[in-house]
Image 1: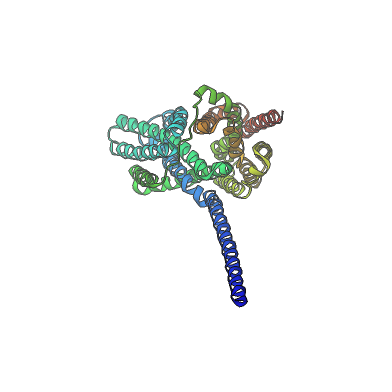
Image 2 (image 1 turned 45 degrees about the vertical axis):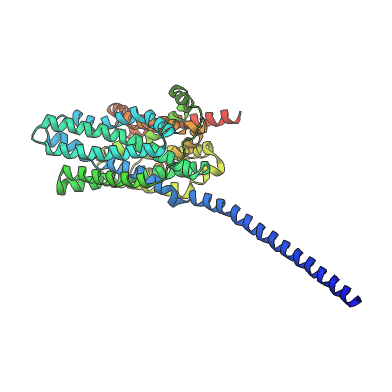
Length: 431
């Protein structure tokens, strides 16, 4: 009997210890499951902020500016030399695109905020493709000059609208998908796509025109626009952020100081791109194109190497540092006494200008709620359009009085004014 009691007690202890072991194992399994669950969102967030994920959205900006760049160096001589129209009209064919872009920026922002960034990108890719189709029609109508010219103007207007829709939508799509912490990175890669697309498009367009004629440029724009439209349609949209949509006037007033700093800071690039060739010719130098290459390489290198500094130090400190470096580059360009000095000046200017757009842009979008980011981006970018549009005539007037090098002194003064605005905004933020 005693043996039976001892055996029964041992069996109960065994069952108790077994239950404890099972409960401990279950707890460990539960903890492992929770760890796995918590790790999955972290991995997902990291992947959404990855370079390749962001590039999958900024690709559409690249397509937009590749389409802009392809006819850029071809249309002015085509209108002036081949069609026989005045140089002023040839210049207007180029400039009218920027007018359309500027006018449609607020609209593109509203579409991105209310209908979704994907819708804006789809419309933008569609406009790019349509502009290529109209360009083909303009080439086919070459025997009727006035009708061909009208088609060229229509193509440029449609492309200008496509530029604002495509670039604004792709930027907001990337920011919304990658998350707020990746805002600076998205804007930075968007800028690389912008300048990379134009840098590739301009020489490629010249080669196509020489080999196959103007229509071949239209065919390429139509094909890449159509392909990108199909690609965008297959990507998942992001949810439209709910909230009150501010009137355009309120958004513009909040973003205007940042836009002014961007516009003034961008005059350095605009002056260099517009007048460096004439500056070289006035001094009987060769290799002006190398200045733009040096600018572009330094621009891209700075964006790739230092984009994380915006999140680390803040937008205003980075903008102040960049505008200071850009000022130094323009000072060197103004005082350049040899092609090598001008080359170093162009590289310094590009290095400094590289992070101006994203650093100030990060601070600009903070001025509005999440539901108004598209409108804020549209207004902010519109100031860059104004800068590119006005630099030519303003700096040209300065050159007419003081010579070609004075264009870079004019740009230097503008960049220093942008630096003053950035310092002021930084002080207001601190107060």
